[in-house]
Length: 448
Image (cartoon, rainbow, N blue to C red):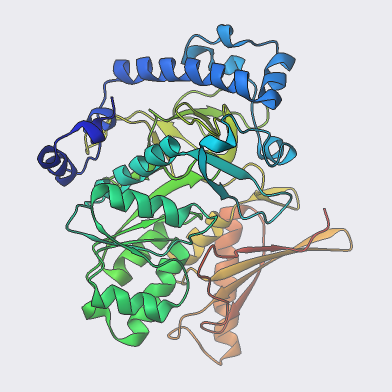
């Protein structure tokens, strides 16, 4: 039974006021959740096998039939899926429902290779929006709030997901999309936006703009839901301080559904996975072997309620840790840590694994803004590694010695963090291009 749809209006509003949107699922016992996951996985495996020839062949190659999977304890019998599989089968290879039953597509940005196109039935949309509603309710969102959505709309999942979730909660929704920051701030002040939904880098940019326009005292924001790119705890604190809000993380992938796969609660100590829809695993990224809770590895998801695009054991390439530690918010949903990098696009420089989040941590701890670029190249068969760091107006100086000393201090801190020495270059305030979407942190010029 769908809990949120079955409640009376009065009771539903009371539950949302407590910070839950679907309390029976968000606080389900381990036994209840596992039984539901087992039932849904068995049903989804058969659905995928019967309707997706590509996946059926993958299962046959591994010698697996639907009857071999009787519950989540058998999930490791199934083959993994990767983004390469989805690109190879573009556009309809993983479609498990007739097109006549699909009502929408969303798509990845397609920066490399073919785009990944995800399909949705109306029920898929409803469940996705309910997951996003859980995220909004968890940060205190109610029908009294004004949710300001400046994630991109269109093919990108950010805007449509949070937009639909806001509607489910009953909040006034501002479908702003990205860009035109002056208009964003005008609507924010005129309509009293209370919850901001966007990328963390754009939240930082809006905070700069709000202060430069002198309208900080007119902003009524209380919370922000930020995702779609990596960001550090230092950046969180910076955004919270500059906007006077609490900043919450949200996680999702277009292939899985979009934002709302997991979300932070008031504890801000990891994101609760909506595991009644997305069954999580952690594996060794090299061997593919499952790892126990508490160990760092690659995150894998199986979609156990999706009709049109039911991916099983999809390798996200995100590195994180899963935990079942008790949460003060009362939710029993498993938690995932903030992704610590990716197993596929982390930088390997002179044989050393480097994650941009490590560099961001060094910069923010040293008081620098979250505006930087990592430039990697290869000269005469040797990797070059530069980090360009933007100074604040207060830091800016024409004194060469002072700049050199600052650069040397950052160099030492990065060497201690990374185990490798980059070239550090301090650049003028606001000289690194601002982003209204995902920030471009890495420029890799190597031909490898």
